[in-house]
Image (cartoon, rainbow, N blue to C red; front, side):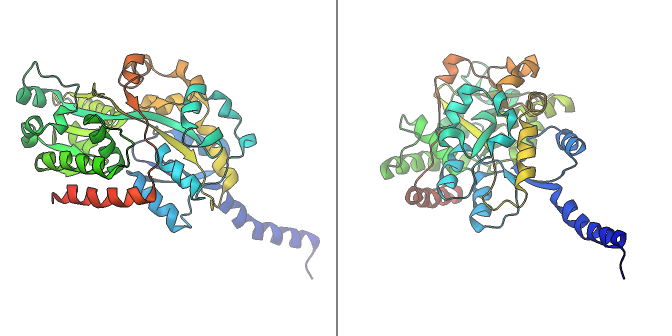
Length: 362
């Protein structure tokens, strides 16, 4: 016969695996997008272990979520993907009572992200940035001339200009929605247009420069820019700054610069959200709340060079970061930035077909 103590110990032993299993959070975030010690700090403070996976395109995240049972508790899609994923029921509303650090958020950023998520009910901004051009200063000026205008999409979208850079390597994001938006904007068209005529015009432009593009990838360009393998990349602002820092640290004389082209560029928001079928919802809220703490948000921004949506973190962000106009654009530059809205499924199908033609050069 079991004694009460034995029964209690047996019950505890049965419960322990479940408790241990509960003390985990599964996070799916962009590559190169968090300070090196953030996860360690979170686990030390909360006792919650973090399974941390990375991706390099919104399309990958969406495919996993649509397939169901992804196993993730926190994902970080961009706002224009999040918008349609909310409509598809892929995310659950945030329990704001478990997110006291929401009070640290910048009201202006919250207003802008509400365009993707009305009332900010399902998501909160992690970081925001722009999609522009990163380039090897010496290689590009050698080919285009010391007086060349480097703050323009002509570097990528003008066939005669980009042809001069083909030999030193040109890379473009494997992100059709963003690439086509930039092409449409360059043509003086609405970057959010779903007109088939506008889509055809953008495709024609992209096909005209396709022979001079070495590859399409949404993360490879970081290392390649930094080590001199390529000289021009359409890329995300912070990724280019990571390449810049890596090049400077290597001391091989490779100087990398980032520009927000004068014609305008995409301003995007990457958002913390909890999938509808997340297995560890409380831990997901704990992780998001931790990431919204000013000191943690500032440390992440200082490490990855992306602007923070956390207003209270600003005073803790390094001066070289918060005073960099390419990270926190001044008003005159910000006026030329455009948002990207969710596309309709019908347009997405057309876009995917067009993008395949561009990538294959046919």
